[in-house]
Image (cartoon, rainbow, N blue to C red; front, side, top):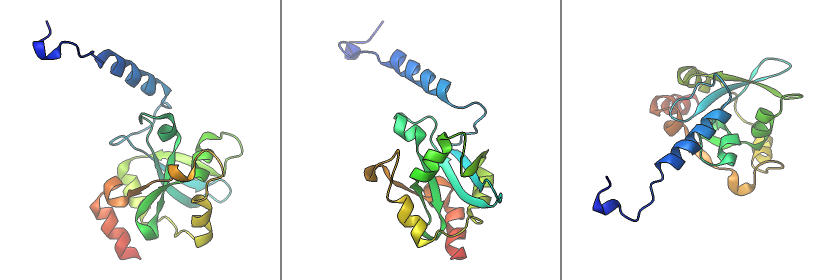
Length: 158
C-alpha cells in the first residue's frame, strides 16, 4: 500500500526498467563497460599502428550519446567527441580503423602511447561533416575518465 506522500505521483519504475532493458538489448554483445564507458583501441587498418584511444557510452540515455565516440587528445589531456571515429565505429565495410574493445587498465596503459595529434587533424575533428554538429562536440577530462594517475603521467610526457 502506498503512503500518503506518494498519492498522485505516477510510479515510473516500470517504464525506467523497460527503457533500461531496451538499451541493454541494443548493446553489442561482449562489450566490456566500466562506469558506463566502453574503451576502444583504434588501430590503422593497413599498418596496424595505434591511431586513437577512445571510449563510448553504450548505456547512455540518448541515441546520439550511444553513437558518439570520444578520442584522446594526449597533449591536451582530454577526450573530445570525434565525428570521424564515430562514423568509422558504425561503418562495417571500408572502415579506416580497427576498433578493439579493451578494459580500463589497458586503456590507462595505451593513453601514454597514443601519438600526438597534429593541428590539421584537430581542425578536422572539430569541424564535423557527418553525424555530429558543432554543439555535439564535447570534452571529458582524462582525470575523470581514466583517473588522476594517468592524467599526471600524460602531463609528465609533454
